[in-house]
Image 1 (tube, helix red, strand yellow):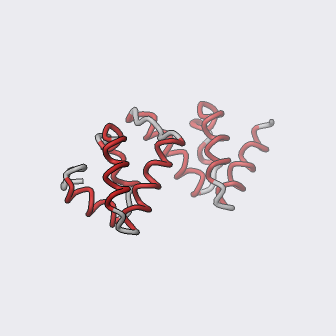
Image 2: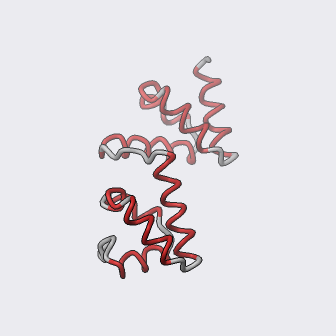
Image 3: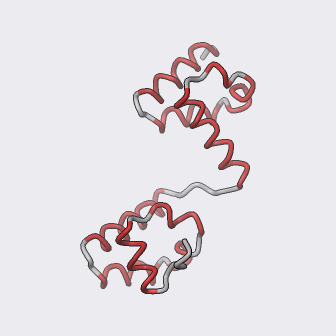
Length: 123
């Protein structure tokens, strides 16, 4: 793929809110795009800056299984299913120790998990 075509694909994906494709293009060509970031539109540049920051901070991306667990926690909390919530927390306690998990929880899950003591109230 030529460089101009790459820039067009990234910009098009970002404009269409297809951030998964845009992110793949950016991650595969990160070294090239760092020097030519002025050619990207604002959405693409923001995505590039986010990817750079996440790589610099050393944050490990969530796996599909972890996203499924967080989705289950959010669903149980929204339905106020405390039995399912407690069981999921008990089986996946180490996941809740990560500091970046709180941003993926909905407000119901945050409140219930804080009340249970599963996550810190400061998050």
